[in-house]
Image (cartoon, rainbow, N blue to C red; front, side, top):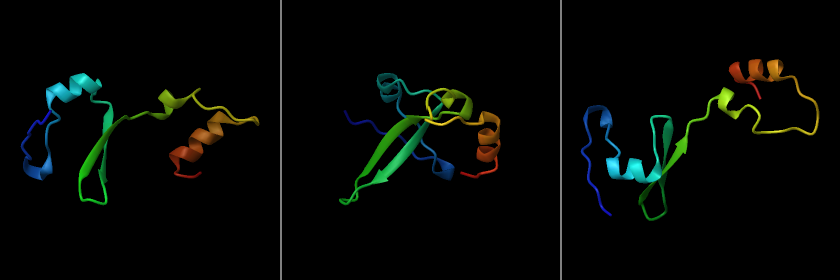
Length: 78
């Protein structure tokens, strides 16, 4: 399947409807761009997960302080 879209000012474009529907892409997704060794561009669509969406997905073998961790994340600390 080959679909064509126009590049608008500020280099914006539209993801074709057929692709959005087939991959179930919504406004919550991000586009990851890859340039391979042949110079070909590849895209990957990933859902943008907020901190709240990720809560409970991961576990730790030791006790953690969720409030302290959230503050560290907000301040950009690891």
